[in-house]
Image 1 (tube, rainbow, N blue to C red):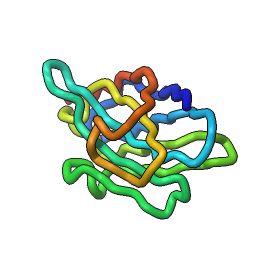
Image 2 (cartoon, rainbow, N blue to C red):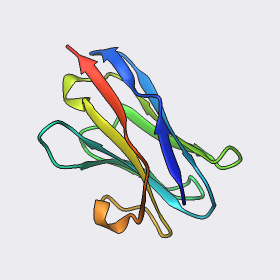
Image 3 (cartoon, rainbow, N blue to C red):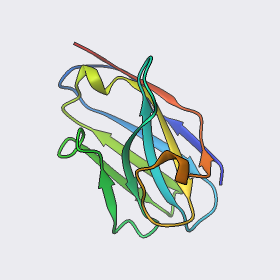
Image 4 (cartoon, one colour):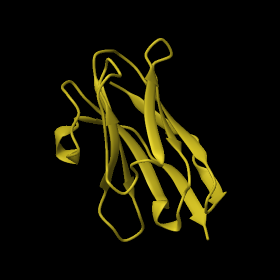
Amino acid sequence: VQLQASGGGLVQAGGSLSVSCAASGSGYTVGWFRQAPGKERAFVAAIDWSGSNSVYADSVKGRFTISRDNAKNTVYLQMNSLKSEDTGVYYCAARYSGTSSSAVRYNYWGQGTLVTVSS
């Protein structure tokens, strides 16, 4: 699986932004992770191949929505009510099994896209 994240940028606190992950192949779960400066990579959200199962980190529940369009081989992360603590490099990753919040369970990673939320 090859993954490419895009859509990052600068947004004001309280605003919205959508990032995308273009991926090759089929049958995989995709997870989004983020890494803030000086911090470890943290789980954000994941969605299985069917799109019927998704999980979120507590910090983003109710604000972020993960979705996918398998016909376009793309997974989306819609981010609303952004906060300064959402700033970081957002990575998408894939695994050939169900959803997981653990980065070590993902075998394939794309390059990150930077999201900066100004307060």
